[in-house]
Image 1 (cartoon, rainbow, N blue to C red):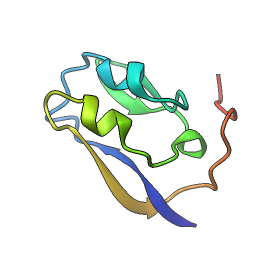
Image 2: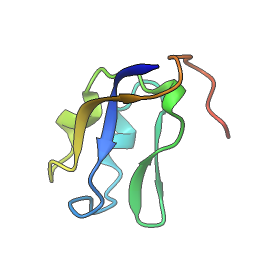
Image 3: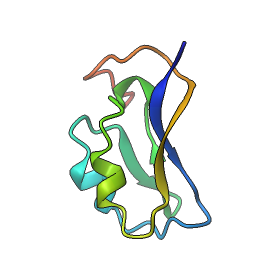
Image 4: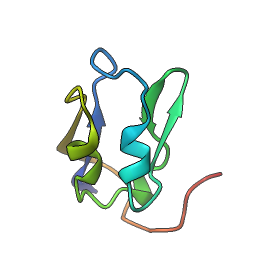
Length: 75
């Protein structure tokens, strides 16, 4: 299914983790020095992480993703 979720540009990401602090659904994590979408089902496409990113590495994009299911993080 196609829906709006985050996309992260690793060329711009510094791995600071500010986006993970502002993500209300815990969809993001810092791994291997970059912020990453940990589970696309958790991203609600709200954009709090976009506003938190000081380098503009995160944008909202319409793309293929599983249906939104908060609390389904794979940890």
